[in-house]
Amino acid sequence: MSQRELNKWDEAHLRQAVLAAGVALWSWAVDTDRLTMDEQGYQLWGIEPRDDLRFEDLSERIHPSDRDRVREAFNATRAIVGSYETDFRILVESDVRWVSSRGQGSDADIAKRTMYGVFLDVTVRKQAEEGNELLAGEMSHRVKNLLAIAAALANITSRSTATVADMTRDLTERLQALGRAHDLVRPLPGKEGRAALLGDLLTVLLAPYNDLGAFTGRIHVSVPRMGVGEAATQTLALVIHELATNSLKYGALSVDTGTLDVSCAPNGDQVIIVWTERGGPEVVEPTGAPGYGTQLVSRTMRLQLGGSIEYAWTSSGLIASLTINGSRLID
Image 1 (cartoon, one colour):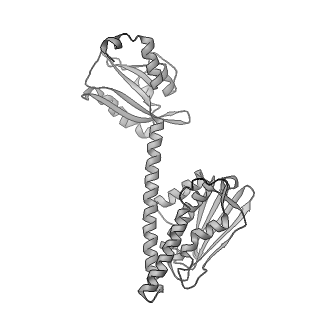
Image 2 (cartoon, rainbow, N blue to C red):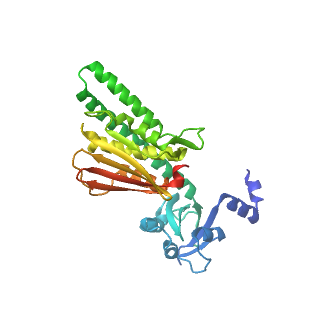
Image 3 (tube, one colour):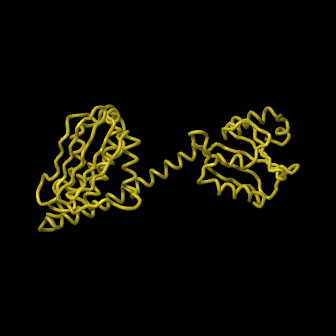
């Protein structure tokens, strides 16, 4: 577009372009500290238009974790050479919004002692970034878990076999079973409705650990016949996988004589799965901040299954109670 064509744009055209782009305009009088915004800016911040608006008035809506950083950035804008961009969160009633403030530093393009810039609502982009970070963290955690399980399987198999050939065969079979169980954690395209029976799902997930000890069948699954939907299948697989990993590293499945009992009983609109370990090392309740795996399980149970998980650290072993919203289980 030539400069001549650009000059033909009137205020109405520019306003249409600004609205279409979701851009909120602001100006700052550097001598009086007065802030002015257009209608879209006031809507973004969730405040009524006023003539005596100051930065401190806006800062009350900035998320407490970002407030000091934004205040320092705002005070430093005049010393910045070139353009600047600051992203931060604001609180509008019960909503958290991400805002990007952009402008020119070093008094560039200042007119009548007034600086100009824009606010952009970047909430969707930030939520996507947070989702990607969460996914990356979850995938990293799963890989570390799988490596830990593979190492434990190799160690246990070496103790229970007499020859290299026997160890190779048994370890291969166990890793293949682990692979089949891990498949349930991934999305299954094209599946609709109920993807599996709860008993079958738990049996497949725990099969890789069932013969790792002094006797076969040390894992007992006793649940009523009920269907599990595709979404719940993937979510429950992740939770069981995490519990089994911890048991293999620290709990009943880490020793030859340990046992695991998984039972379930409907309770009104809820389904409660009880994970009971016996015969393993003495366990004590962890202290300090929960690890990533514990946080992942807790968040997954709450957000995906509409329930919760509670741990009881008894002298004979861990007891974990998984409470699931019955309607979520068949989704």
